[in-house]
Image 1 (cartoon, one colour):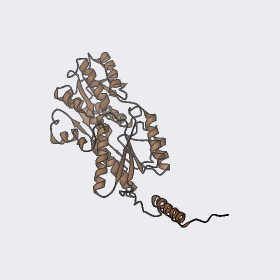
Image 2 (cartoon, rainbow, N blue to C red; image 1 turned 45 degrees about the vertical axis):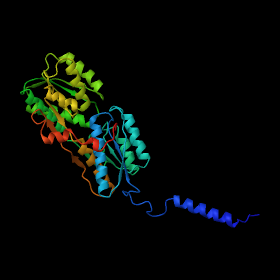
Image 3 (cartoon, one colour; image 1 turned 180 degrees about the vertical axis):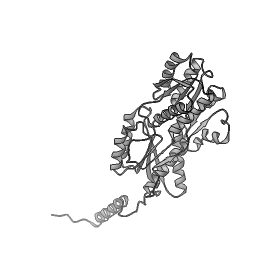
Length: 345
């Protein structure tokens, strides 16, 4: 026999059901459209690593873009995560796969390897999660846009800076970064081509050694090169921040800093200090603060149905003792990170 509900029980049931319905999403747009404060675009920004100053600047640029969109009434949530080391391809693959499976709205990625990251990015595309590539190219056409430095031109600028510092004569070496890193491969190619075309008096004695992912691995590679060529070496070009840091330490430890002409790539305060001491003759400078901001902007525009360019050039510059203290260079060297990052980020 069915038991008849009492009025008290009936009211309790109705109140409980009403409370439950209030917690469930209703049909339509009760949660607000994508990009609203109630339903912000969730953008995963995935760097190559988490330790170098370059990536901190990338992080700050993404947060700036988030705030700029908020000022326009478009709400974006930046989720920042990447591998700790810049040689951990498998971890970066896992990060991309994880975000794609979580249903993130889009990904901004600086791929560690131009081929190893193709599969997870294309799988994300199949899941309707679009990707903007920044910093280093990916061998795929299933991306929204590529936002980066003209790295080949950066290598050419490095060759010119070294050639001018050496008056076009002397023995030099090139310290590479890592195989599969499209950005640094382009820098190396630009340097070698420009040296051959414009600076034939620079004799290349070594160009097949790799610095590896950290300052420590770079320092060991640099020490090996200095032990082999140091007495006869006149100059060198190094292609990213960690490799430049390792080479600078090796030169200082060997007593060769300032005696061998040295042009690096990217920047931190140690490079500025070394330049003021005459231990570096130049470094090629990107604009990572602008790069990540433009990458986030391109992805949000795409999510809003706008057409975005397939390639965005974020500029490349060379810093020398002659222009170090100009307002333009100082603005690039000192982006306002503290305005966008908490201590320890």
